[in-house]
Image (cartoon, rainbow over all chains, first blue to last red; front, side, top):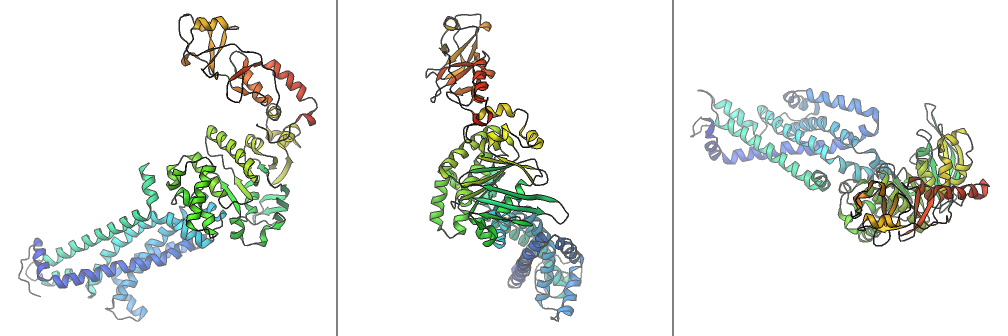
Length: 230
Length: 377
């Protein structure tokens, strides 16, 4: 890959102009690989978190096992999963599964704690009014846990955006490949533009996703705006 | 009618929360479970709607065993009010009130209309319907809690210390309105409190429970005060129970004429009518404003203003209870209790000695003297 632009860090715009289609394609993959695991992780964490809240003995093992999962280096997990699952080594599915595991590791605890923070008199009132266990979870406990869960979701999403980049080193297409490219082009001294572009796009993506979660949380919790105004 | 038949609740660790409780809460009446913490009163209440399952014994509502229907269905037919109201913070007041009607399949529009109607019934403006619980004061939240419990028009209501978490002034107001509402609605109410004064004020019947979940005495308030069944009950109903029992005896104590002056009169005019050092001051409508101490006024040309007045005395309604009447005399700086009519205008005054004459008359045969329950406390 030979570029006509210079090698100074601020030449990222020139680099982007020259490789527009390729960079946008990488960005689009990056978005998918960041968001999909968060969605899947949340879908798994809600029932797991609920169970660890409902049965007290489930909580300690779930929290320690998921916590342990988080200590496995992501690169190792990306490489290990194909062996475990029989997938191809460059299959993005590996990345999705690995990051889903990390998301679950973060969110299970958050969901359980968020549900536990729902005031006892509120859950008692819900039960006394004849809501079934599921209705209570769906109509009362989860809506009230949204602020806590959303805070965990922000951490998980931003962490995912940066973790996805690591998969670039094993050749999965996303913004991390810009770093690989930059490194490969650094033959006579460092070649910054793709590296800086990758960093800028990752940060921008993290900020946008974070803002979307904040916005979604605000829209789904009008009652909190009222409390904050007091 | 709610009936407990030899109901016990024992926990695996051997703790006995409720011990062989047998008791009937008659239809259309308020039955209060009162006792110190740990006496099993809340446990007993929660066994009625099966939030706690008894270890043995049966509970029936209108002769139907509570275990004969699914718990969620049972609960939708029983109103439930708790301390701090337990409102859903993420739902508007209207949606909170409409919870059970919506669960039982009422349409959204109908449920909302019903919610607004109920808010007005518990003394809240319809405009509150769109607010969130956090925008309401504690007393207002508790009213919403009552409205929510009434929403499905259940014949039976369970109330667990509903007025304990609000300040005394608001509590007094809530209790008064609760009694007024109950007069209209005639629900079968089981009411839990640790406050014997509240029990006496609200209960048609009071069940005093002792630690270990034992029923110590079940009686009408006046009877409970007059004849505590054992030392525990005697201790629990308190030292001034003799005085409190006067709250169940109404009497027309003949009031003496009380001279008064209006606000804005001169001190000289007050001296002209006064009988002793204290003179009663009223407003233009004749409602008492306070007592003026003439011994502390040296300029006769001064005009009487509200800031000069002593506000110590309580007011007794004409024909009120002996407790109210005696209290007005005891609390008055002049020693003369002010009696007012329904419009709050001064009728006259009574001295403590006059009230005590009525007391000794009224209380002589104790079993006959006690008025039927339900009178103002």
